[in-house]
Length: 213
Ligand SMILES: C[S@@+](CC[C@H](N)C(=O)[O-])C[C@H]1O[C@@H](n2cnc3c(N)ncnc32)[C@H](O)[C@@H]1O
Image (cartoon, rainbow, N blue to C red; front, top):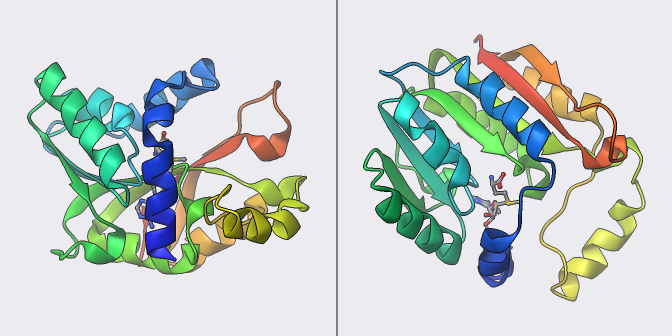
């Protein structure tokens, strides 16, 4: 399954890099909401970083960012962008959360942006995030919850995957996501959904959650 996902995202990477941000105003709001939590001495992990745009924007505000993605091509594009921008404190690596050797409790903040709905088991991933975070660390995520109004995706996603047209795609509602994050040992501190525009299910819910146990 992991190899299938990597192949899909490798194929998509160049097009993804060229695509404009779908909702620039919401993206800016999410950047600002994230920055409110970043400090110059922080160590940050971003998983599913894609072509690295967000990590490169946050880089000047923190000590170091480890940014990982399952797709080699996404990482190549991100490394190229970092080199051209002269950014030295982001380490882009082809990896999944499971590949990270540790140390546990090493990160102040973990970012998971537009990724939790693309994983086979989001609960397992959130538990791994929990173990990678320092005590009181923050998990900041942004996740399209297709289960709000697009439950039919549950039916077509497996077919799309077999045909190679869709990646792994999980359909769940906002409350299910909140339950997954809370039950892994986090307290939800902020939740934001952009108003207006697209149907609610296509908007990502932005969540800031603190490690509490
Ligand atoms: C929709 S893109 C989001 C990219 C970026 N976070 C953003 O918000 O623009 C999803 C990314 O997650 C990566 N991905 C998918 N499954 C993954 C996994 N198991 N571990 C790490 N990255 C993964 C894909 O290669 C892709 O770059």
